[in-house]
Image 1: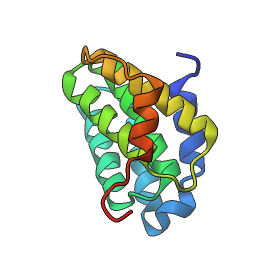
Image 2: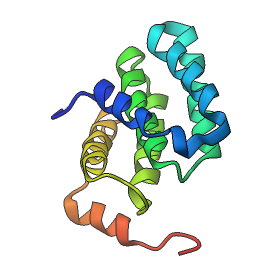
Image 3: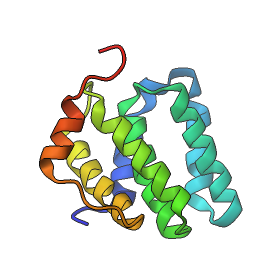
Length: 140
């Protein structure tokens, strides 16, 4: 990996305040619990962060943050569910075209390949990734 997902998570989280509005305090509390604990306590905070992300599908910095912490969760607890969650988060992030940073896109594409590899899936070539990005989704 060409970057540190933990540092990328911190960077993305620092840009998420405006995206989350009234839920920012909840995000801070959950992130603090996730970052300073392990095991079941961290897992519960992680699940809370993912639930918060579902409320804000257009909160691109927060969505990127969730991708990065999912990789951290994979390293803490290497189970298929985390790889699958990571893939879904990456796919949702990569099909969105709003307010993303080039650095996050590159890093999330790299993580996407890692999540897929962790499940034993073939790596997509650039053409497949580009096709997926350009394919209209519902409402487009």
